[in-house]
Image (cartoon, rainbow, N blue to C red; front, side):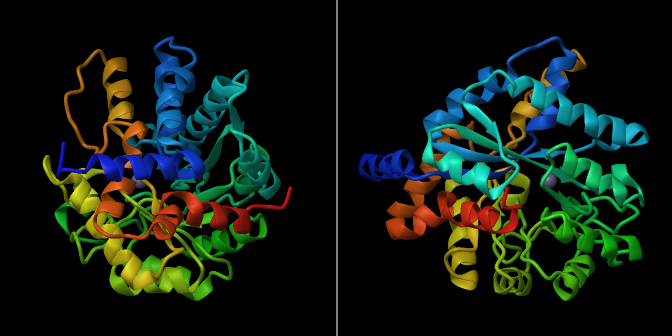
Length: 349
Ligand SMILES: [Zn+2]
């Protein structure tokens, strides 16, 4: 699929992935589970994801609850339906734990289960009602980004990312309060879809560290979904972690150089931010795309993801090793950094 990775590098990476937890800080899992349930499917995580998580040594997955633009009119109901669908889907699954606290995460790592951490990708669905953040917390949701790419009552997203233009405007008053409320609730804040003005404001007001779960470097590939050098440094200064996005439109890759582009983003960010602030947040969405198309009776033929599935995550680690990165550094990137971040940010339990 890409530049030639040696057997040796793959073996070394597989060893790392067998012996150390890997994490993916962004996957639209709850939405896909709901779409597939609406088609009458069952055991979605078990059938579509678990074998690949296992093969890739993935131990922690951050599942977004993302309300599509077409569902915004009933956004709150849709968000609750996604949360309920995912919880029901994994209820009887002995191999999966929903992570709600630091203790959950610590216990997870002592055993061999796979943890799923729920968070809101955009808070359009709460309007200006910040009490709904408490409701979400009570349902087990442990983080949020204020906006997806579109504007909402809390702020403005990095609109029209593919057209290379942004709409200016920072957070609204309620958006500022939302940051404070998230911090009070020990929920993590994701800035991945926020625009530059909003990012700057978050830097000014956030007292806890925040994350960009699925963004690359704007210097490596010029998309408004990616972070400027200044933003990468600011996020790291505050103790945050950024997850490398594996969608080709954001990584800027094409068939033949997916792995190379992922490595270039990661290596660039590591140089700027230092180790401990960069991880994986692959945002793999082809499976979601297939689920949505199937519900409409259509065929999904796109290939937007740099990786086919999570069993290929060790290939990224292998590519980093082959390009000269030290094992200790790769360990941090493949999971160490995000696990430490979430242990730090989640409520104690
Ligand atoms: Zn996203």
